[in-house]
Image (cartoon, rainbow, N blue to C red; front, side, top):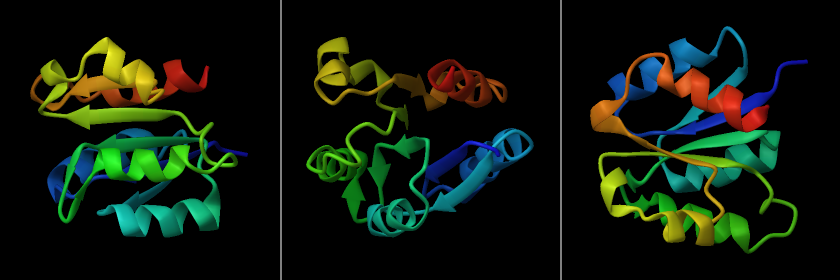
Amino acid sequence: MKKRVLIVEDEAWQADVFVRQLSASYDVTLVTNGYAAINAIDDQMPDIIILDVLLAGSTGFSLIHELKSHDDLAHIPIILITNLAETISTEIAAHYDIAEVIDKAALRPKDISAAVAKVLG
């Protein structure tokens, strides 16, 4: 059985790249906002979440706060994908229990699959 990856990304071209990179090895679900992410998490309980920080209508940190407030969801590893990577300190990442932070500006096509494989072991 393939591990489940939830991608929360509102930039269509970026989301398409992530889906193409991951779908051969993982069961991938794509949503474009935090509300849809909560529904997808309730429906599928992903093994990992790839989360854009700046989403239309909310931020990725709003979703992280929601997840961390539920004991049954707090354990899901999160990879943050953001153009703001340089502003996210190791202390912030540790506080939110973020597994990995990837800079969109420096992202290469295989980086996302390598990060998922690293986090999931």
